Length: 207
Image 1 (cartoon, rainbow, N blue to C red):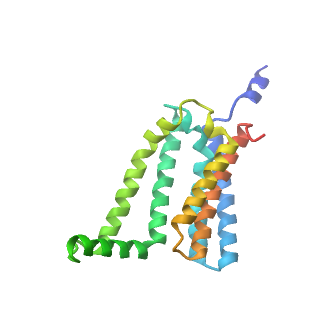
Image 2 (tube, rainbow, N blue to C red):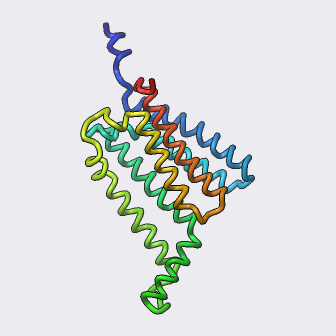
Image 3 (tube, one colour):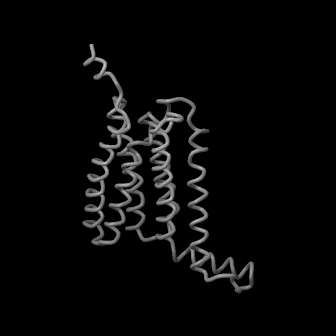
């Protein structure tokens, strides 16, 4: 009887995070290797590998963010905040030249070119502000979006749709960047779904 109960029990946070780390290493190697083979860019491959590792791990614990006031919820929220901040900083780094140009143009329009600080400082401040606001909104938005445990966050189809929508948004937002960087950004988004699939697989919700 005890064995049967153990077999039917759902994996806990340590189990999901352990497999999330395994998946993170695997996807980092895969994405980094593929990017290097395709574009022969060491820095891009390294950045893609790091992003893939982070996205995969966060994806592996994210479905349980609908478990309110639980340890997994708190840890998943912190990890999701980290991913949001990483995403904002990554997009800013990829489009830094464009961001600087926008700050300089806005400075001319608002201050006649006499900026209160160097454009790089202003741009960095804007990026940090956006990252901080986005991170602060994670928990309230999760609370609004999730009303019960094992709801839409545990749906394969919903996660496919969300990943596709987010990937498309990233592709559009990086339209002015080189193709290699755009491919790397979308690949990182895709690894988030791989992590979520690991979670759902352990929960027996893939099929």
